[in-house]
Amino acid sequence: MKKKKEKQLKDKNMAKNNIKDLYELTPQNMSSVVNKKPGISIKFNSIYENIDLYSFRMSIDDRIVSSVVNKQYAIYKPRKDLKHGKHSVEVSFKDINNRDVQVEWYFYTIDEKTKYRLYFGVPHSHTNISSGVGSPIEAYTKSRKRELDYLIITDHSRRLSGKGTMSINKLKRGKDFDKWDLTNYEAGIVNKKHKKFLALAGFELSTSFWGHVNVYNSRDYIRNKMKNLYMFYEWLNTRNNAIISINHPNESSADIEYSLELDEYLNFIEVANGIPPKKYMRREHIYFKLLDKGWHLGVLNSQDNHKDDWGISDNLTVIAAEKLTKKAFFEALKMRRTYSTESRTLKLIVKCNGYYMGSIINCNIGDNIDFEIIAEDRKNKIDKIEIISNGGITIESKNDFKNKNKIIWKPQIVLDKKNRWYVVKVTLYNDKFAIASAIFC
Image (cartoon, rainbow, N blue to C red; front, side):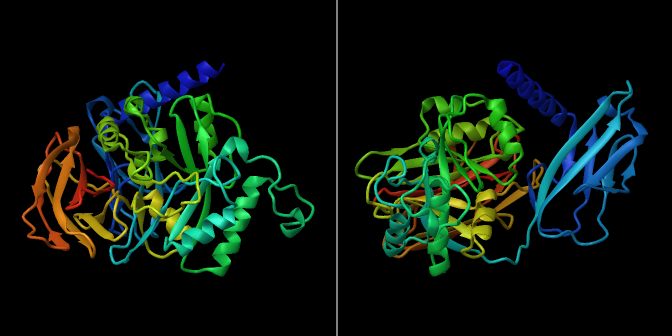
């Protein structure tokens, strides 16, 4: 039965991928736009040129709208400004053979005037609840004193059942609490007391298909090893805001088959894991291979702490968020506004056509892609900046910086058929480097 359901998910995904080749969507699926009244359209190719126009329906955020429809396309122009955030589009019609066709996609409207701050921290760590040391509150307290802006504790989910060490009476009477509740409760204590530090909880899940993954922004957890991809998709599909990261990837991770269904949830990969000079792995080449497959992934650098060393090392993940709150943090994470750094003093801003790193932007072949790259490190000189694209190939680079600590570089690239994602890499004179989440076209 499980294999049958996995095949159904694969068949459903293949069907959606095939349909994707049969029309053009505006805005693109998962993309960001600054226009508050964007034209929302679907353009058909010849296979759907004889659709039943009377059967055509378009809805935006579950509300049916009146669109202009003909044999070539359907378009809707909102009369009022759309709110900033995620917007879902659903189109349905009957084809010439009276078969039902349904197309779904979503996009984000963003405020180009929003100013983001950079928050440095660790998105993958452990405590004595699973394979680490110290209590959650001890990990949060020491991370704050070590000048991190945030810490996400991601203990192994198989260890999260069973009561924690804190007295249940101090939590809430009349309910059974396990170690998952304890971690979240202690995170709440820290957040209530300290406004300049964010304590968060996720969990590390073992799977048979992606290895170990971290799950963020979920109210509950999966205790046992997840062996069935379909069941995992079903779980994620009822938790729309969950965010998934592939942990400490190995070479086989590059073979993960692309899934349009799961692309919404699989948001990150650790391009580095560990604490130098001990066990520390750089895995950006696997990141590039997964981008080539079509995944829309951002980057994380994880210390994966198992000792009393939360935040001691300089390898961190930086989040560009409006403010340091749980809501703003996970909004930024969902949009992949991150970069991996091996220097805690490196500030990096990457924009394409005004959109931040991690964005999916609406552009066509032949369009100009205007970059704005600002790299500043008060302690380390900047040696080189590269723009890397499909195949992991550097398509633009600059290194004549003459011992500078701050660089502003604004190259322009013409979009072609081959290069559809762009990653900025900054290398320092001490050979440490940073990698920003890709921008996708």
